[in-house]
Length: 291
Ligand SMILES: Cc1cc2nc3c(=O)[nH]c(=O)nc-3n(C[C@H](O)[C@H](O)[C@H](O)COP(=O)(O)OP(=O)(O)OC[C@H]3O[C@@H](n4cnc5c(N)ncnc54)[C@H](O)[C@@H]3O)c2cc1C
Image 1 (cartoon, helix red, strand yellow):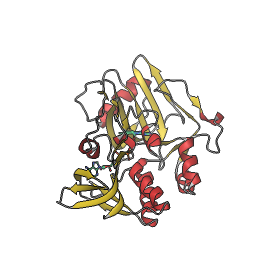
Image 2 (image 1 turned 90 degrees about the vertical axis):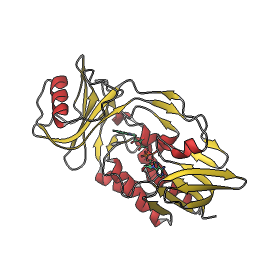
Image 3 (image 1 turned 45 degrees about the vertical axis):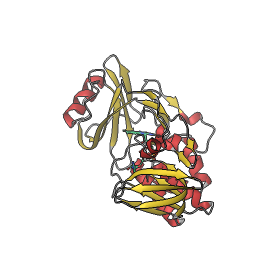
């Protein structure tokens, strides 16, 4: 056996799990398809309960020091804000902290605790019998483990290889997202919802702003790309203001596909994070739930 537990996927969920297992003395190897960590911020918001859980492990400090505290946040893009200051928590806010930095901190933690992280080789399949699981990778390698955890995201290879279905609904609503600078930024916490659509503006560390929302004029399912001009046009039309949006760091669209695995465990194979459940990311649920 090469490892007590092989974790497939070095996203936030796989990395936190690797650290947690190491704390319990369990030998873990993380296998990650991509050679380099993703540069995209993706999930921005860490909610109070997530920060509390990081604090239980003595991990909250670098998150609190590097994040932006957002005292009120939207629910489902609706205009009215949830007042997070009323939460019974030492962290009564949403902490804006880009996902790639969360992943970097969790990777550092997993490595420091003795986990191995191997990047640049996708898992292609697995077989389980009796007391072990054999995991195959693209370069022809095989890893034998007592247990395997698929933390390999919504398109999970582990889930498919274990024969676990992922029933749910396809996306029929799409949101736009642009992380960019602005010459005339709106007031902190700005948001608007009207018959032209919805827009939320959130601060990112380093002076970038996240412009995200719903645009009824842009609901074609096959269009994945968003351009700077497209973002400017939507933001201007929905808000009625010109914020001088420029220098985008990331432009994307995402949908509301909603699925849950028909089982979280089959024999010695378990699923965690987006591999087990996925839904509309607006509002910050996926990463927080996974962690
Ligand atoms: C635009 C956008 C905004 C979002 N905003 C928020 C937010 O504000 N708050 C929030 O909570 N959530 C948000 N989410 C959701 C959040 O990003 C996900 O829920 C989160 O990344 C799930 O983490 P994970 O570790 O389960 O999976 P992932 O982050 O998807 O990581 C899976 C990893 O597995 C690797 N992998 C995949 N296949 C293989 C394979 N065959 N072999 C080896 N490795 C493999 C991938 O390369 C990846 O590194 C957002 C998502 C998007 C797209």
